[in-house]
Image (cartoon, rainbow, N blue to C red; front, side, top):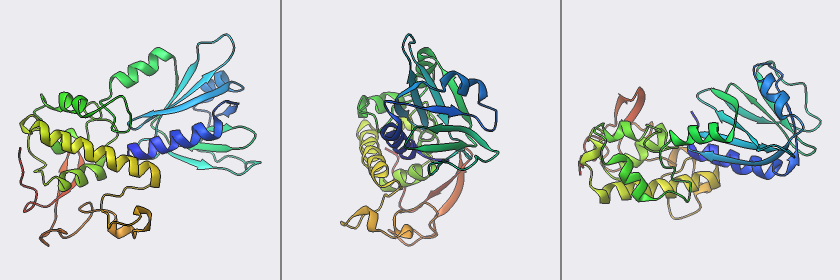
Length: 266
């Protein structure tokens, strides 16, 4: 499933490509036909993101605006198309196009039209997003300090913190040498603030490079070979102590951690 940096990157790109233009919206597959009919020919005002949720705002004279809410889930994917675009595939949920760009969306978990109130309801259910300036470490601390679940599970709870997925989860815990099974409410405010600050830095790098990078050699992050961009996720041996990495399941997702190095519980 794409993590938050990917969705914010999509919001940035789609806002650049479509923002301020009148667009055509179609649903070749048919599952978004009613929404496409409401939006076709409207002005695409902006694209935004919160965690793993992508939002498009559409406006027209005399309306208060409508939003498209997209959650890619495990199988959702956008594909760029050259103009004039080829006939869309049978799984294309939504085609978005102006006179310069065309993108096709297939396989999302969510693709729906919402009012302003509906969008606010979705966002209200989400935790602080490290990529949004309106949030800081204090929001993160407040969100986690009363939660008894293990920190490794909480980091995947989008109501606690939005945008962190399975890869960033394992990497953040390794970076701070945290035992993934420590209850979140047992961690100090300093530890939680450090986790937040690292997440902010890494996710911003993810937006810039369009890839997850948590290991740096002092040079450009883009120059690193793929196998060297991560510290613990899908590794067989610990880069710090050379002991075998433990693979377990937490919140129904695979967790990678070093039981020798990751012993901090404060």
